Image 1: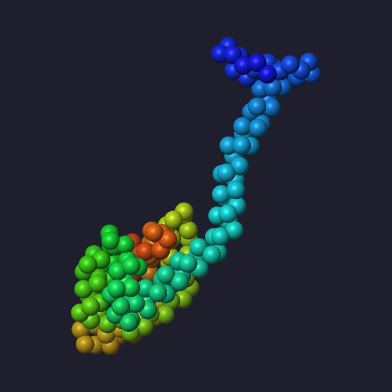
Image 2 (image 1 turned 60 degrees about the vertical axis):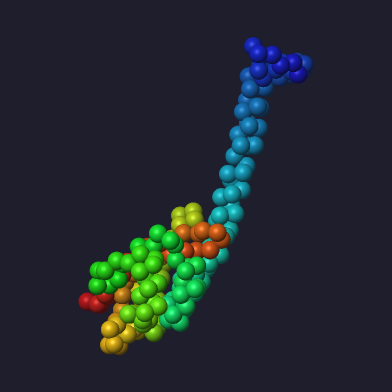
Length: 173
């Protein structure tokens, strides 16, 4: 093969291949070389989507346990620094404010039992929706109710962290 500036593909010393055949062969191999990592990454993503969904749900469970156990240390790791936590009554708290709420027991989460949960993954971001039966003490009064929630989590440093939470009281019609 001889390569020059005027002939970047080179001229094969083979009488059986035309310049068009050489160009087609080079394009074929470049496409396969360039697409191979993309295709294999897609296969890996498809193969591990269920595992990533399980990770998200495990993180969600760990967060619920930390809330009911008032484990501020664990919550610190499970919540993103830019947390936007919107309660059912409409108040919004940052991460520091939410941790203060847990620490002070202004809201004492006794139990949260999710159901009808759906996880949708978009790369390193998860959107989780569902219902949750809540049992808590708010300002000294025990309350039991169901909420519909929307949460957004993202993977940071190999851990799923809650970025946003929004919930409303649910009342079946």
